[in-house]
Image 1 (cartoon, rainbow, N blue to C red):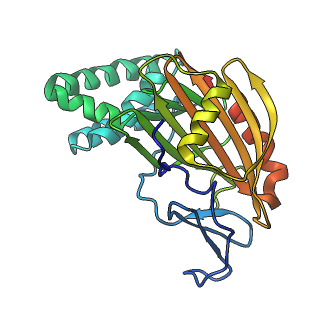
Image 2: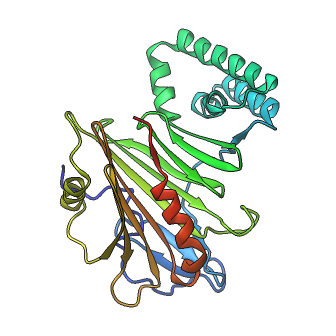
Length: 289
């Protein structure tokens, strides 16, 4: 792997947090080694102030008419990746409700229309809408349709950053989650990043993949404790040195020719109600193929 620090590693190798003058009173400021800026408030909710991502709403069966027409409207406005987010999310719904079945058919027709109209440019729009989100059977499913993984969540994920890199051989995703009232308060209880790499051949084992990630990310002084192991993954609890008030989880996943590094971080004061949810998220992450 190339020795360079991905932009995705947003707060896992950060310098010790420090107090600074900020835009809001009682906010504490910290910055990671990539220069990403974060705040946490009195309630220890993590705030991200420099994101430009859209507020993509998870698609549901109950709101199927709204989501279909929203996708079509965005397509008509030439916002093709945004429109495809909704059309592809509709296609991912499993419900056999007649309205949902019809919406899936209509969404497929619009996707086919875009493909025929834009040709090779459609591939770019399709790649830019790699991540889709649906809410079904009381579970949120964040799906990467190009990297072939699905993340199940009990609470809504909010997309913060997503990008292709390394000439389409790498992909970085960052999202925040709120666990108390399902999103009706400011800030996030935990933030997750998933970095992916595509290999020319078969992916290594999880342990070999971790060594590769450490070569790419550089030496760190995180304390790791293994808490789960499977044939395609290994998950650790991670702690930061010194008095840094954050801890988290790290998971390494492999499938076919792909390796994924997932890291979660949260303030220590909320770890009791956050860590178990985050562990389940990583343990149940589905590698589609």
